[in-house]
Image (cartoon, rainbow, N blue to C red; front, side, top):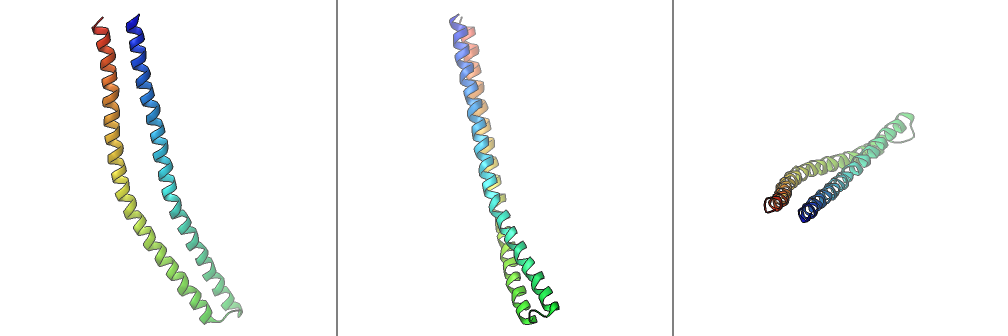
Length: 131
């Protein structure tokens, strides 16, 4: 009977490790989602600038705005677009670097986790062997 209780305790420890593993995965995914939300905001700002350029071109055609003003708007939009593209490029470089490090860490943790699970199961088996 003591052996069954011991095995039950060891299996409970294994189940706790699996529960903590799920929490770790959730945290990692939340960090990734937060990380990419900044890029979405940058892209939406660029879209707004492009809309202003189209509106200014329409106003020039309708005679409501001078061509020089529209060119100024277009130049500012180009600056926004170029800076956004530079940020996207930088974001991509950082993302590749961080993703590599994150995956290496994740796989190392997986190895450690399953080694601990294996160790706990071996302990449970030894309790049957010693009986």
